[in-house]
Image (cartoon, rainbow, N blue to C red; front, side, top):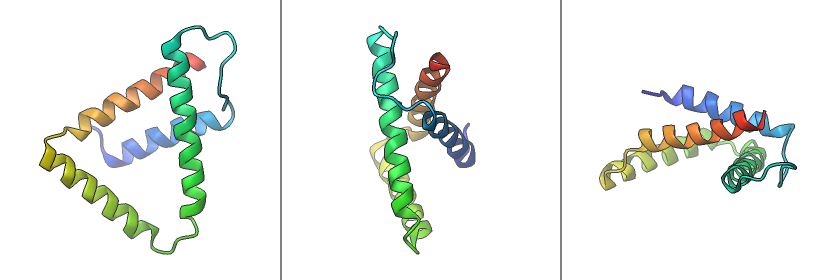
Length: 102
């Protein structure tokens, strides 16, 4: 089981790994899946950095984030979606792309 804090830490590590190597294409990479993974991780990291800069200016950001998380968890529960498994799979894919890129 992965905790919320562990998830936050893993995602932060993945985003930080992109700060120094952000690129839309990786020279020498020929695998279509690898290129797709690199682009996905770069877009995710870029979007999160942009969102965080905007969010820093909001006074009630903690309440908004909590409401979003609670709503997402409730909706997933109502729809029968195993968010923990989906989240772990997504993080594993992003970590694999990062490991291959190193």
